[in-house]
Image 1 (cartoon, rainbow, N blue to C red):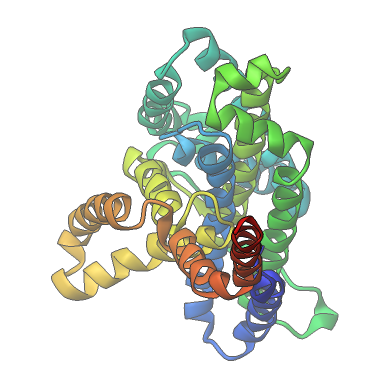
Image 2: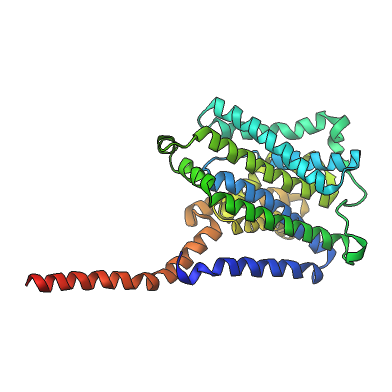
Length: 346
């Protein structure tokens, strides 16, 4: 990495973390709820980035995985009285097992069938939630009187402030774990499989196992994001996890930058605030249709103009802008060496 950018990334993340800690004390509880939902979705998009950007696999069904984690967590808390933090972990574990099963089935089918399988899962999931009414509450879903993520009495925080800080810490920890994962040995295996499965296998990488690990970890992370989302909102209904939501998560990953972790936050902000922006322009009745249109157009434009995503292309431009000066001395030295050789030959 260029010496001028070497410290830019950690300083930027530290500034973002400090800003996040300050935000709940200067923003209203109403706006803070949207920001907390954005953090929960950013966790899910980070999991999708691991799958799409780092291992080269595609999933159009992460909305269903997100919903599975949310339903698992809220059922454990509302029905069985589990503590919220334990329900979040179990929600992630349930989605990890589900991701493994889905990955095995996709690999058995072979080729691009995994993507088609995830589309089918996204379409079937809301229907299953409605059919399993004794467990899921059917069409009306599961409601709680208030969020179970409550602050301790000694903290002096409101429920909205505490929920935001919990999600902020969870996102920071998950991003740290994912970053260490992709920079290690397993991350190199992901990159090899993404580049060429045949070459990766020729170099001793177990391609099927690597793909399964990527899909399982991605599903677990998305499930924890869904668990936080449902518990913060204190509600889980089938209409929240339609195919359109899965497409929105995929668009968020691509537009934000599927190979960048900051892109998860940008993509999550789009998922949360784009419908609100559309609603302010065309009204609540048509906002959903306009949001989907903008998602589609934004996805196409991003693929054309910024194929690495907004954050990815900005990082690349910043590297190019500062790179030549750092690289200039070796080039000059090489040219000087060639000039000296020419002089000796004369």
